[in-house]
Length: 527
Ligand SMILES: Nc1ncnc2c1ncn2[C@@H]1O[C@H](COP(=O)(O)OP(=O)(O)O)[C@@H](O)[C@H]1O
Ligand SMILES: C=C(OP(=O)(O)O)C(=O)O
Ligand SMILES: [Mn+2]
Image 1 (tube, rainbow, N blue to C red):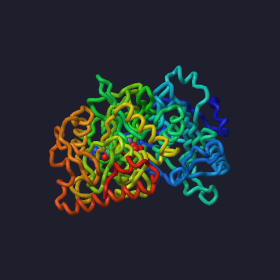
Image 2 (image 1 turned 45 degrees about the horizontal axis):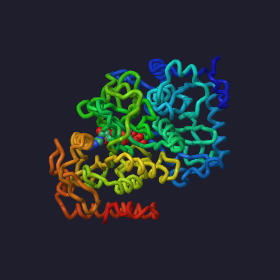
Image 3 (image 1 turned 135 degrees about the vertical axis):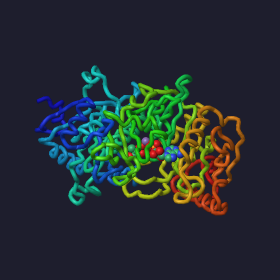
């Protein structure tokens, strides 16, 4: 039996080993194995069980001398001893004995100079389909000459840790060993853990190549190739806003910025499905078809129609699909130097302007601050919006000191004179519960205006509390909504809430960045 070298990982006596099966084969295998069902559009639909979002508290990095000084240890990058990693890995590979193993030998990094080979070893056919959809798929020739991977990820959701024995926090664990070039994921079937593990690894590898890794989506003008990137934490709109029928989609989540331009790490997208409608998000809606992998969307057992409004399994319902499923995808996922950078934030307090322009210092301030409200679902335990400050709009995925990444962004926006906007895709007219989420069509219109240069010669108003410049008009957007204070009935309640949020910005900055240059510290909100 061909085993494709998996015994090197300690996986012996497999029942069968399949390498790079096609989406049709994987969909079929998953259905036969009872992992999921087909939807009326042909998508494979699965339930992931207890874990329906990422589990940041269960993530660990192996602390070895070779990487010790490069990792920013703390609450996000939590150390674990090598022998604990080795022991869990040994149990996981033993668990995989006598099972069917699904391998995907693929790549991350669309820029050939930066491409890294990732071998994913899956217990489940459905997760293998997911990662087949999400990463860069090798051609037949590339697969024949694949050789050794640069990194290996073993995903065995059926193996549950015993915290007291294994020295982890729960039955789930996501363990990265940079020295052995290996990730072990067990106890959780949320596929987002696999793609974000690839991201974390790239975020460790890319800076030494002079590449800034970014938690952002990217798209470009089909004619001018002018490129824009959209940074943002989960739920802020990276995937939704980058799928724009008038622009080429480079990618929805993970990119690098080199001297040559922006490039996607991935080859597919992972979109939220909650309340999805064909009218609001046609590109994503039509991507839910044969070959895609749907997680935790409720479906009628007989008609196999989706109920996108049903959040009973989780608010974080998802679909993974190859980027080709978006009509105007840019393949390979390579664009130019960004002319516009957008920081997406979902402010559940409803006080940040829907769009504002940031100067160089304010851009640095907001990049290291990374404010948003965590929305329900993507992380375990979050059920209502909760304000959070996540450095670089992606703290959970950044193994190194934030200054490594922040300095690279600072150099780039200076060098290329990149314009930076802060866009609030969250609430307006009042806080969560009182006001409403910003209308998607207005956010889209504001993003379009920012990308087209329509904000270059409009009137701006300086917002004293948030210390940003707010354009006063935008095509296709009622001017009343440009200044959030105007959207609140109770102005003093607005002032109070705005000052409260400004104070939270200041406290966070003072605590995390006491040594930042004054020009950057001064560019933040003023309570
Ligand atoms: N004004 C808005 N801008 C962006 N997204 C919005 C807006 N209003 C509602 N949404 C919804 O918020 C979610 C944004 O999620 P998504 O684009 O997947 O974020 P990310 O990729 O950053 O995690 C989608 O479900 C989208 O339909
Ligand atoms: C997949 C994820 O990314 P995002 O929500 O940013 O799309 C996640 O955070 O689990
Ligand atoms: Mn996304």
